[in-house]
Length: 306
Image (cartoon, rainbow, N blue to C red; front, side, top):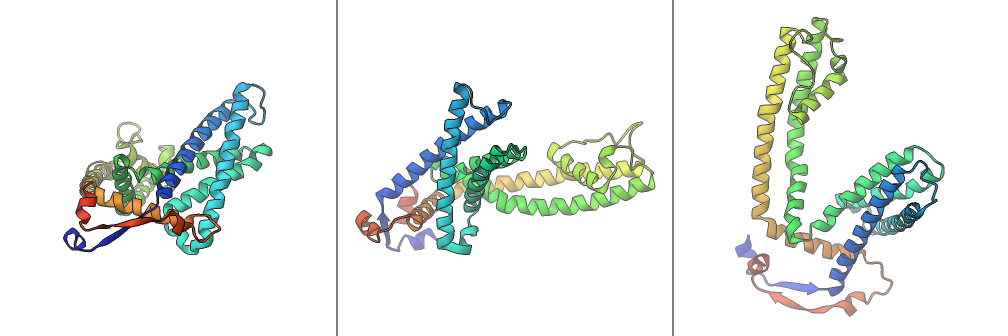
């Protein structure tokens, strides 16, 4: 692919304002994240977040205003992109994350004013989504871009395939184990496995904790048949499935590392394209005024090796 593309004359158009725009957005994002972190911790430690009676709370109020203003600006920017791109807007996961985080932060204000306890749950998800937005900015830097690509490919490809396989095995185990407990009158031996949904949750915990979460042997254990089913499930999850998943992750890491530079250049080009498409300028001469004469790139491999 590279040998073919290197013969193609690629014209590179550079806009110095694009770099400034990305740098400015990165700085504003980090400032907002710092403000949001401080205000979240300070608000959680105060008995009444509506009371501002000392220097710490006054500082929290300033940071809350900064966070709210940035959330409103982000929401306006995302609505502008939604107006331009319509349904294509939702094809980018970062767009959904940007919109969700800004909407939740704006919705936090009326909940705070009405002193609703739901404000803390909304704040929790708003802070989570806003913090995860850092991956959008990290993808343009050489040091972190490869890790963002690895994480994204793991979530999209490897984790989905692994989740489908695990759900099938979990469903088979839960149904068989539930019926076995019913036949042994052991449904109420442990509260964790007294219902079918409880058994499903126990199966998920076994996978994530890589160990049994209930006492299935001994005086308080299950019958032999139920014990055999539990041992088979633990072996399948902790040995077979996790080994397969680790092998998948290693293969994905190696493939992304081999193609990291090319992916980084593509990510940068995509961000520059989004910057040009989403600028909010009234005049149509912006591109002409900001244009710098192009340069011809004869060897694509030389660019990717930089």
